[in-house]
Length: 215
Image 1 (tube, rainbow, N blue to C red):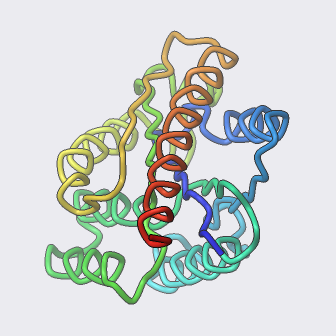
Image 2 (cartoon, one colour):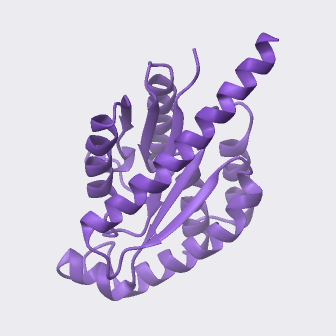
């Protein structure tokens, strides 16, 4: 069985990532693609597991990997992941920059996520970015996580991650979209176009490889 193409989304909070995934799924299904979805594990952590603990990180990583493995072994054409394995590497960068972990711990975590033991690195990474001001405006007000200082550090860490990602995940194609002044429908259409172009190119490559093997 040919494995599905794995598309991962990450980015700034309130950038429109999750709503775009819902629209994108329907558009792709309307075109005849079968779509698997892995939702963001961090949004489903049970209440008594604090985000400040190591157990939280372990739970999110384990749940994300488990669900990606399960979904990638089903007969889908495309699997869309809302914050997957590459996002966990971004999170390592962010938590290091916050001073919550040491550089050694960050490197150990990165090495684990990138090891050959962890399958199904993303084929295509879509990064949504939004400014600090727009993030807070969309949220309605500052909160526990969405604060001016925290989102500034988040976006700075995202830029740092993007500088590293091409070295960390050589096979992943990366597409960055700033959603500050772009309507939701236009964002979804842009994402749809870049994904279908990528899928078509990937499919042609797989077909050529199969023909070579059949010779």
